[in-house]
Image (tube, rainbow, N blue to C red; front, side, top):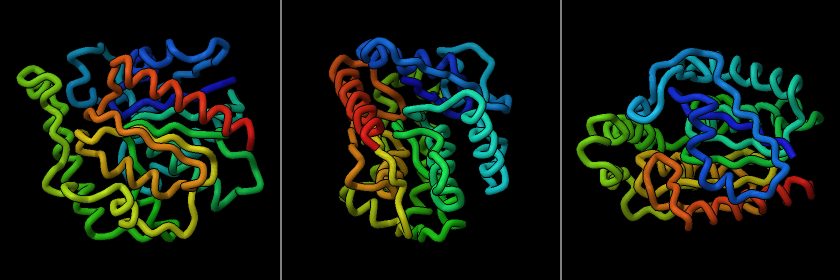
Length: 260
């Protein structure tokens, strides 16, 4: 059993290893985790340098379609050399990479095996640029929320917010998310098709990027997905309750991937 782990922007494979340590310790033995570093050096993600030393990496240098496609090619080459992988486990920017690679695979090379049999997306969403290139319709409301949430994340995750407020810094994006159900958020992106491998979507209602995580769940097959709101911010809470829930979802997606 092999799991490919794709970290968030401005972190690293070793940092991601630390971030998931609480629930990883609750998984069965015999699972091999591959914590790979992104190919580009990066500044630290907001607030990350308070807890972890450099180096820090990213999967691309800009959010252009060309850079994202190049990153997907890099990922496919890495999988071909080091795989196959049963599960893709991704956080933040890693979710953008993994979901983009799956969509491109489904559109261009569906006769070949996907990069991984199943996927776990944590606190991350899809690329609007990739979606629109592939014929998805992204509403104006989703675009407005995406821009506002990126600004809010930078503020709430930053070092000054961490030092001043600790975990209380996470307030989400109430001005744009208030009153909307997950199903209503999913309707903001119209899908010509969906990612069709088993998926787990883990997000927090206090994360400014919460809606992005819900949007990603909406472009995945509802018959093959499970979701979990850990009720925190842009992070992986290490409480026993959250760790047990994530470990249970991990076991579920492994079983589903094996049954494909």
